[in-house]
Image (cartoon, rainbow, N blue to C red; front, side, top):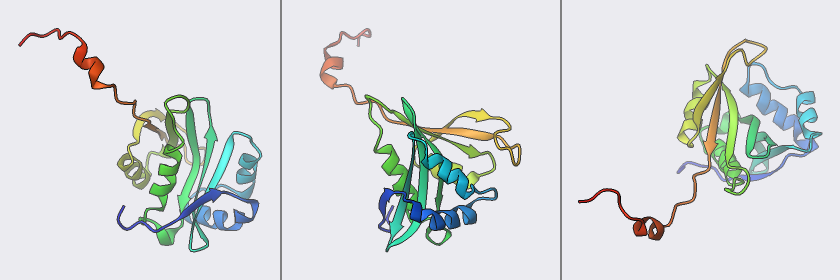
Length: 169
């Protein structure tokens, strides 16, 4: 991420809504409305973050907390700063919230025709794990459920070396 611009990631506030809506509208054919964001913000399990660069909001992510995973509901980066590391930094921030003791995965649905998002997520270690047919009301398109799974902690070599080998040389 050599061309990454420096950002600050913070909680989304009510006064951020005009900037968030502007990014949403420039990013999606069927954007969320303000009421969709407000409905999420009223749920205890739903969290919104924004990315700022030079005092301007340049991206956001909305996610839900589940028992064993984080589920991204919506995420976008302002057109003028795409491919400058903002999305990578936001998703990395979410992945940093994972732990082997609690939430071990980040999931989200990606439209089957959104190849840019699919390639981006694969570059961050996400894999398509399922297809949801007719997922989107507006288009009846399918969605790929993409998942990032926290790597299991490495097993100490002392234990594996002390086990008898089933193969003889």
